[in-house]
Image (cartoon, rainbow, N blue to C red):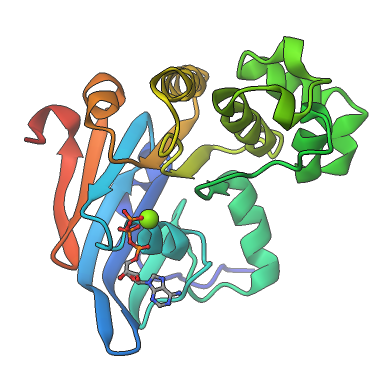
Length: 236
Ligand SMILES: Nc1ncnc2c1ncn2[C@@H]1O[C@H](COP(=O)(O)OP(=O)(O)OP(=O)(O)O)[C@@H](O)[C@H]1O
Ligand SMILES: [Mg+2]
């Protein structure tokens, strides 16, 4: 059977994972958050998403994985149209690009291993939960519980939980906000580690020191649109 022609696919698709937003407008009631926003973001390496508080960074992330629908425009992740996708087809897409929201993500009464296995219960028995914790340098912490470890380790365990899904890209919303310097450093090192393991990492962040050290690319949300999207070196 001849495949039906699909609408033009994002051109960067061949070169690796991408997020493309075309003509996105998003409103909440009378408030227009994003208006006519278009951008094509390669998701290789580490991408920092920056912008003023309330500018729409979290909204952009939620649009990317279909947790919010735009009022106008189209969203493509990995070249696949997201905003019109039914919920059951969004699940596999979200496994390829898990979205880690801000704030606590673990259950205090479960070990880190059991917390990581919440992503996929079979991971508890086939070694994948341990392997994911090992990937973020937490092999010695599998049997500890969240209250027994520091906030940096808790966030790294949350990252390990996303790794169980064998993602291509991690989307993180302010992974270091509220952490002390040491914990934030641990999390940033972990992001560099998973980047070096071949994952794309896109994170919303206000941490400009980390941006200077880690970012390959910067996307700035400004005045309801994209103020900048390009190499970190070119971002003033
Ligand atoms: N579900 C919602 N209902 C109504 N308004 C919302 C909703 N989600 C976000 N907003 C509003 O949209 C605007 C953008 O929100 P968003 O959370 O994306 O900002 P942000 O750039 O992530 O800010 P911050 O840096 O403070 O996290 C804010 O004014 C927020 O109040
Ligand atoms: Mg936010």
